[in-house]
Every structure is written in structure tokens, then in C-alpha cells.
Length: 302
Ligand SMILES: [Zn+2]
Image (cartoon, rainbow, N blue to C red; front, top):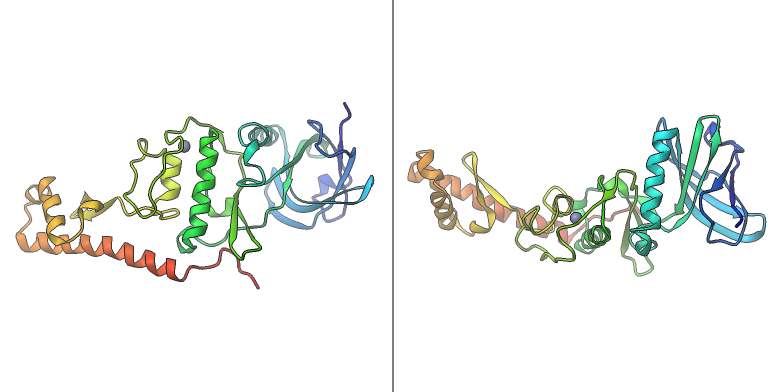
């Protein structure tokens, strides 16, 4: 079994990678032995991790070009995290590569002037999402949710789902496709959902029962906003948003929960607070429809 090597070359690379060679930790799926990676664009730079866009080439075939993202980790702890990440790519999430997560090109390890160094090389799937989820089209938000749900069904909790950990590419049909990246905080996960479907703009699912907490957080109001609000405020307490269709239904729900008697609210004040709850729930819907009618583009295309 022959190992393949990845050599970094170019003076724009992080100092410790300039002209350094790393060896693949598992046989590459490509039939070449020596790959070269240069730096096209630095995407992220921290003390222990560099992420950059790169073109991988090989001297063995001048037509070979792989547009890649290299995530390079330095030091024992960071390398260990990267190794866990590559494990998820190889095992649990293997079938989602190229669909909801980038394709794995290879994993290379070695030593540089910064000590133990490893590089995770994956396909370049577009640009990081910089817009808040809520202002994007329903189609796009559904794609994000579906992707994360598939990851959960595969037994993985991402641990850091936020806009910046999504990359987006424009497809030929003009729509945008999100891929979920950055699995260095991921862990194995027995998901409560197991394929259970929630309804778009339907009742908010119960976290821990209908959906697990990560899916709840990403689908909810602070995330993709694909369900109706769960609760509406009522004088420092809460009533279920589902109960708030009009002022009377809000009043009934608050009374049934003992809020009105506990707070000793006058009928006038109760009505006023109920009206506020109605405005909140209907306001959510109006705002949602407004965004959906004229969503923002996930990328600032020129
Ligand atoms: Zn889950």
C-alpha cells in the first residue's frame, strides 16, 4: 500500500507550511502519489488552525485539478479534533459527502515547525453564508434543515450550527445550495427524531420529544424560523402561541393557566395584554410572509 503525499508550496502560505510535506493517513482514492497545494485565498486564521482555499494538482497528470479547502491544524489538541472530524467524514457522514457536506479528498499528517500538523482537505463547495437565516428563502431554509436532519439521522450532533458554518453555492437552476461544514465540535448522537417530519409553519415541535435540542434550536425562531412561535408572553408568564388566535382565545388560555387570577389582573388590563399577545403571534406571521415574498440572496452575487 503506497502512501500519498501532499506538499504545500508558495510564499503566501502560513510560514510553517511553506514547502512542507504531509503524508496521507489513509490511502487516497486518487491514483496519484504526490499532490501539491498552493494557497488561493486565506479563509480563516487562528492560533492553531488555518483554513484556506486551494487548488490541488499533481505532477503525474497535468489535467488534474481539485478545488479544495484545506483546514490545517497545529498541535496535539487541534490535530486530535481534526482527526475526530475526519472520522465523521469517513464513517457516519460518508453517504452525505457531496450532498450535504463537502467531499473528503484526504487527510494528511506530519510535522512542521509548529509541531504536529494535520490537514483535512475537502472539496470547495462555495462561500460562507453571511446573511442571517431568517431573511433567506423558504426553499433555502428547508434545504439547510433537511441537511442537518440527515446529519442527525446519521448519528451526528454538529455542535456549532451557525450561518458561518455553512457554505453556499449557486446552482445552474439559479437556486442556492447549502453545505454544512466544520465538524470539529461534532459528537455521536442518538437522535430523538429518526426521520420524524415537522410541518413547515406548523406548530412548534417540543424539544426533547418531537425533535432533539440541536434541531429545535436551528429550526426555531432564532434559527431558520420554519415553525410557528411556541409561546406568547402574557404579563411575565407565557401562554402557548397555538392558543392565540384572537383576544378571547388568548384570555381563555391565560385564565385556564391561572395567570389572570394569580396576577390579579383587571378585565381591561387582561384584554390589553391579550391583544398584545395576538399582535405578537400575528406579527410573526406577517413578518415571515414579508421575508418569504422578497427573500435576500444568500450570497452577494455580482
Ligand atoms: Zn438530533
